[in-house]
Amino acid sequence: MKTYDYEKSILTVLFALICTMGFSQVSFNVKAGLNLSSYIGENSDHSEFKPGARIGVGMEYQFNDMISLQPSLFFSQKGAKYSSGFDGNIIDADADVKINQLYLELPVNVQFRFNIADNTNLVIATGPYLACGVGGKAKFDGDASVGGIHINGDDKIDTFGDDGLDYNRFDAGWNIGLGVEFGKILVGLDTQLGFCKVMDGDAPHNANIGITLGYKF
Image (cartoon, rainbow, N blue to C red; front, side, top):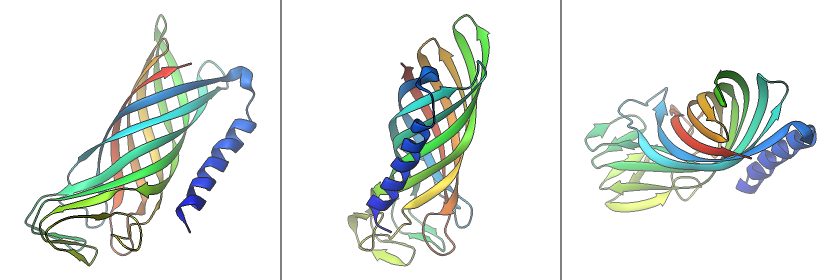
Protein backbone atom coordinates (compact mmCIF):
# COMPACT_ATOMS: atom_id res chain seq x y z
CA MET A 1 0.00 0.00 0.00
CA LYS A 2 1.31 3.43 -0.89
CA THR A 3 2.22 6.08 1.69
CA TYR A 4 -0.74 8.33 0.88
CA ASP A 5 -3.14 5.44 1.51
CA TYR A 6 -1.86 5.13 5.07
CA GLU A 7 -2.06 8.91 5.55
CA LYS A 8 -5.61 8.96 4.16
CA SER A 9 -6.67 6.20 6.56
CA ILE A 10 -5.25 8.05 9.58
CA LEU A 11 -6.91 11.33 8.59
CA THR A 12 -10.22 9.53 7.96
CA VAL A 13 -10.18 8.03 11.46
CA LEU A 14 -9.44 11.45 12.98
CA PHE A 15 -12.22 13.12 10.97
CA ALA A 16 -14.71 10.43 12.02
CA LEU A 17 -13.87 11.01 15.67
CA ILE A 18 -14.41 14.75 15.29
CA CYS A 19 -17.78 14.29 13.56
CA THR A 20 -19.16 12.07 16.34
CA MET A 21 -18.45 14.57 19.12
CA GLY A 22 -20.44 17.54 20.34
CA PHE A 23 -18.37 20.70 20.12
CA SER A 24 -19.69 22.11 23.41
CA GLN A 25 -17.39 19.70 25.27
CA VAL A 26 -14.43 19.83 22.89
CA SER A 27 -11.12 21.65 23.47
CA PHE A 28 -7.98 21.75 21.33
CA ASN A 29 -4.26 21.72 22.09
CA VAL A 30 -0.84 21.99 20.50
CA LYS A 31 2.13 19.99 21.76
CA ALA A 32 5.85 19.69 21.06
CA GLY A 33 8.59 17.75 22.72
CA LEU A 34 11.43 15.26 22.72
CA ASN A 35 11.42 11.56 21.79
CA LEU A 36 13.93 9.03 23.07
CA SER A 37 13.38 6.00 20.85
CA SER A 38 14.93 2.58 20.45
CA TYR A 39 13.91 -1.01 19.67
CA ILE A 40 12.47 -3.86 21.75
CA GLY A 41 11.78 -7.53 21.06
CA GLU A 42 13.66 -9.85 18.73
CA ASN A 43 17.20 -8.80 17.81
CA SER A 44 16.93 -5.51 19.69
CA ASP A 45 20.09 -6.20 21.72
CA HIS A 46 22.54 -3.30 21.75
CA SER A 47 20.09 -0.84 20.18
CA GLU A 48 20.57 2.53 21.84
CA PHE A 49 18.25 5.46 22.45
CA LYS A 50 18.11 8.02 19.67
CA PRO A 51 16.73 11.52 20.34
CA GLY A 52 14.11 12.99 18.03
CA ALA A 53 11.39 15.62 17.89
CA ARG A 54 7.62 15.43 18.17
CA ILE A 55 5.12 18.12 17.23
CA GLY A 56 1.38 17.97 16.73
CA VAL A 57 -2.15 19.02 17.49
CA GLY A 58 -4.92 17.34 19.43
CA MET A 59 -8.49 17.61 20.52
CA GLU A 60 -10.18 16.50 23.71
CA TYR A 61 -13.79 15.45 24.24
CA GLN A 62 -14.70 15.58 27.91
CA PHE A 63 -17.36 13.11 29.05
CA ASN A 64 -17.30 14.46 32.61
CA ASP A 65 -14.89 16.16 35.01
CA MET A 66 -12.78 13.00 35.26
CA ILE A 67 -12.87 11.14 31.92
CA SER A 68 -12.10 12.41 28.43
CA LEU A 69 -11.07 11.11 25.00
CA GLN A 70 -8.09 12.73 23.25
CA PRO A 71 -7.15 11.91 19.63
CA SER A 72 -4.05 13.70 18.35
CA LEU A 73 -2.02 13.95 15.17
CA PHE A 74 1.79 14.15 15.41
CA PHE A 75 4.87 14.25 13.27
CA SER A 76 7.14 12.02 15.32
CA GLN A 77 10.82 11.12 14.82
CA LYS A 78 11.76 7.64 16.00
CA GLY A 79 14.47 5.08 15.29
CA ALA A 80 17.56 3.75 17.04
CA LYS A 81 21.36 3.91 17.16
CA TYR A 82 23.98 1.17 17.08
CA SER A 83 27.64 1.53 17.96
CA SER A 84 30.44 0.12 15.83
CA GLY A 85 31.61 -3.42 16.50
CA PHE A 86 28.13 -4.95 16.90
CA ASP A 87 27.40 -8.18 15.01
CA GLY A 88 23.75 -9.25 15.09
CA ASN A 89 21.10 -10.95 12.96
CA ILE A 90 19.52 -7.68 11.80
CA ILE A 91 22.30 -5.12 12.35
CA ASP A 92 25.93 -5.92 11.54
CA ALA A 93 27.95 -2.78 12.10
CA ASP A 94 31.63 -2.03 11.70
CA ALA A 95 30.65 1.62 12.15
CA ASP A 96 28.17 3.79 14.03
CA VAL A 97 24.64 3.46 12.63
CA LYS A 98 21.76 5.90 13.15
CA ILE A 99 18.33 4.91 11.83
CA ASN A 100 15.79 7.75 11.55
CA GLN A 101 12.08 6.99 11.11
CA LEU A 102 9.63 9.89 10.61
CA TYR A 103 6.00 8.97 11.26
CA LEU A 104 2.64 10.61 10.88
CA GLU A 105 1.10 9.32 14.09
CA LEU A 106 -2.44 9.14 15.46
CA PRO A 107 -2.68 8.31 19.18
CA VAL A 108 -6.18 8.00 20.69
CA ASN A 109 -6.00 8.15 24.47
CA VAL A 110 -8.58 7.83 27.23
CA GLN A 111 -7.63 10.33 29.94
CA PHE A 112 -8.38 10.24 33.65
CA ARG A 113 -8.10 13.62 35.35
CA PHE A 114 -7.62 14.20 39.08
CA ASN A 115 -7.65 17.65 40.65
CA ILE A 116 -4.66 17.99 43.00
CA ALA A 117 -4.64 21.77 43.62
CA ASP A 118 -6.30 24.97 42.46
CA ASN A 119 -6.23 24.99 38.65
CA THR A 120 -3.87 21.98 38.65
CA ASN A 121 -4.75 18.45 37.48
CA LEU A 122 -2.93 15.15 37.37
CA VAL A 123 -3.72 13.29 34.12
CA ILE A 124 -3.26 9.57 33.45
CA ALA A 125 -3.69 8.56 29.80
CA THR A 126 -3.69 5.30 27.89
CA GLY A 127 -4.77 4.08 24.47
CA PRO A 128 -3.69 2.80 21.05
CA TYR A 129 -1.82 4.57 18.30
CA LEU A 130 -1.59 4.12 14.53
CA ALA A 131 1.35 5.44 12.52
CA CYS A 132 2.52 5.72 8.92
CA GLY A 133 6.19 6.09 8.01
CA VAL A 134 6.54 9.13 5.75
CA GLY A 135 10.31 9.65 5.63
CA GLY A 136 13.68 9.34 7.28
CA LYS A 137 17.27 8.47 6.46
CA ALA A 138 19.62 5.86 7.86
CA LYS A 139 23.15 7.20 8.38
CA PHE A 140 26.27 5.02 8.36
CA ASP A 141 29.74 6.18 9.37
CA GLY A 142 31.37 3.17 7.69
CA ASP A 143 30.61 -0.36 6.50
CA ALA A 144 27.45 -1.96 7.90
CA SER A 145 24.46 -4.06 6.92
CA VAL A 146 20.83 -3.84 8.01
CA GLY A 147 18.45 -6.69 7.26
CA GLY A 148 20.85 -8.10 4.67
CA ILE A 149 21.29 -4.74 2.87
CA HIS A 150 24.98 -3.82 2.80
CA ILE A 151 26.15 -0.21 2.85
CA ASN A 152 29.71 0.86 2.10
CA GLY A 153 31.37 3.84 3.72
CA ASP A 154 29.84 7.14 4.82
CA ASP A 155 26.39 7.12 3.33
CA LYS A 156 22.72 7.94 3.89
CA ILE A 157 19.87 5.88 2.47
CA ASP A 158 16.08 6.00 2.82
CA THR A 159 14.68 4.14 5.79
CA PHE A 160 11.39 3.35 4.05
CA GLY A 161 10.95 2.21 0.45
CA ASP A 162 12.35 -0.44 -1.87
CA ASP A 163 15.42 1.66 -2.70
CA GLY A 164 16.42 1.88 0.97
CA LEU A 165 16.17 -0.33 4.03
CA ASP A 166 12.58 -1.26 3.08
CA TYR A 167 11.27 -0.73 6.62
CA ASN A 168 7.56 -1.38 7.09
CA ARG A 169 5.67 1.92 6.91
CA PHE A 170 2.73 0.86 9.08
CA ASP A 171 3.10 0.79 12.84
CA ALA A 172 0.63 0.40 15.69
CA GLY A 173 1.03 0.08 19.41
CA TRP A 174 -0.02 1.29 22.83
CA ASN A 175 0.50 4.55 24.75
CA ILE A 176 0.76 5.02 28.51
CA GLY A 177 1.22 8.56 29.78
CA LEU A 178 1.30 10.74 32.86
CA GLY A 179 0.90 14.50 32.79
CA VAL A 180 0.12 17.61 34.77
CA GLU A 181 -2.11 20.49 33.69
CA PHE A 182 -1.25 23.91 35.09
CA GLY A 183 -4.28 25.83 33.86
CA LYS A 184 -3.84 25.83 30.07
CA ILE A 185 -0.21 24.62 30.20
CA LEU A 186 0.33 20.88 29.67
CA VAL A 187 3.43 18.89 30.70
CA GLY A 188 3.58 15.19 29.96
CA LEU A 189 5.69 12.04 30.00
CA ASP A 190 4.64 8.96 28.04
CA THR A 191 5.90 5.68 26.69
CA GLN A 192 4.92 3.85 23.50
CA LEU A 193 5.33 0.14 22.82
CA GLY A 194 5.03 -0.90 19.17
CA PHE A 195 3.20 -4.08 18.17
CA CYS A 196 4.56 -4.25 14.60
CA LYS A 197 8.00 -5.30 13.40
CA VAL A 198 10.03 -2.51 11.84
CA MET A 199 10.88 -4.79 8.90
CA ASP A 200 10.15 -8.32 7.69
CA GLY A 201 11.86 -11.25 9.35
CA ASP A 202 13.13 -11.59 12.91
CA ALA A 203 13.07 -7.83 13.42
CA PRO A 204 12.47 -5.69 16.51
CA HIS A 205 9.60 -3.33 17.36
CA ASN A 206 9.59 0.40 18.03
CA ALA A 207 9.74 1.70 21.60
CA ASN A 208 9.65 5.33 22.65
CA ILE A 209 9.73 7.63 25.66
CA GLY A 210 8.30 11.09 25.03
CA ILE A 211 8.43 14.36 26.94
CA THR A 212 5.97 17.02 25.81
CA LEU A 213 4.99 20.59 26.56
CA GLY A 214 1.66 21.88 25.32
CA TYR A 215 -0.99 24.57 25.42
CA LYS A 216 -4.74 24.00 25.69
CA PHE A 217 -7.26 26.26 23.93
